Image (cartoon, rainbow over all chains, first blue to last red; front, side):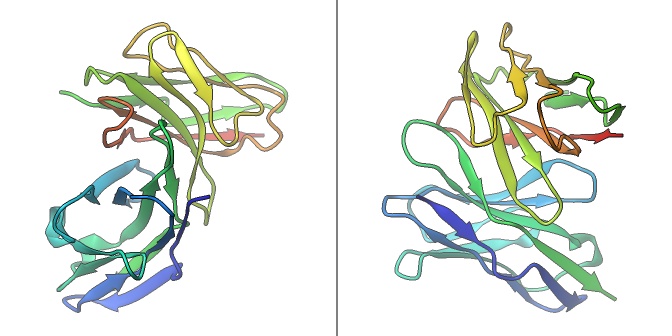
Length: 114
Length: 112
């Protein structure tokens, strides 16, 4: 069965510092991978996605992620964070078969401090 | 304005009552989904529908029911059989069953 692991439940970082949010997945088949961001009491907004092609994916708000098949990882990075980046970040993998089910990690709270 | 709307944003119900959460989209998407989110957990799939008049159970369908009579609407009923209904409920849609899912703003249900 496919699964997604986000090892860090919370990542504190100072404003303008770089950040990496880790995501590892388990799957025996080709995968589609996603990062979503959730601000307090709101829905999820798509940051970026990997479907195929270049392993470095650029998203909105200056975020990027790199698909690493050998390490089964899809870490999210930003070179310089802002206070407004404070939010919960979810990694997800598309489930197997004909469904479009998304399997989510438990989320990482990015807490940007001034 | 195109998008997904969920209403109400906050909902309070007494234990033992059924409650229906609304989800509407004007994106002309075929597929729609309902997820449940609990604190410190990822989202879990309740039900999904790939086309009008058809829907399938997700991972945690017990105590929930849905209908898909119109393409733009996918209401979720939380029945009294759901043992822990207090949660944040998110609706999503995608153009087809293989496309990226886009989410609504969510409804926070509290059962007293």
